Image (cartoon, rainbow, N blue to C red):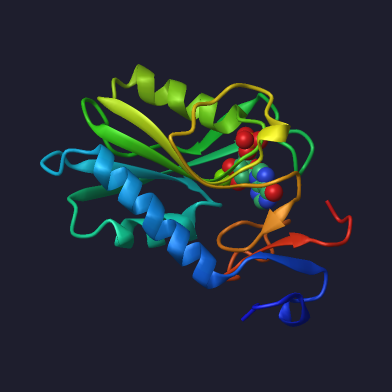
Length: 185
Ligand code: IMP
Ligand code: MG
């Protein structure tokens, strides 16, 4: 548990604890539900790896709404903790999204390159509608414009970890979100 900075692992400072995250997930699920026709199945597409925990909680908060789930894995190469415009698909979406209502589920929007690329792909595959849900948003870092339909928290430029997000593959399993208190980016 990390309820305060005293109980956070060394080098991390608590940003959002578990209760705060769960309450925000319920609120986002409510916003998504109120925008969608319950007769139309919704497709959640999680952006791996960072969105895996958020998507798992969000999907369960959307029950018993009819829901289909898929994943996509994207990477952008360049500096290790900063996206470049060169976004590559490591694992493609398996589902035919043609005509479907899709919500892209992201952990965090930083430069915007990843989501812009994924939204373009979904548009070329003729998704019926594409909305974007991101737990976190760092608008001060944006390089390209992206319309985010559902935002959990807007944060300043901290490199954050936990709740699916990593620093060099560490910390994904933490049930809270913290930022690196030392300058280890
Ligand atoms: P983009 O810069 O908006 O393309 O974001 C690329 C990806 O970098 C996001 O989907 C995240 O998975 C990851 N990312 C961006 N900022 C952070 C952060 O502060 N912590 C962990 N991952 C991040
Ligand atoms: Mg991500």
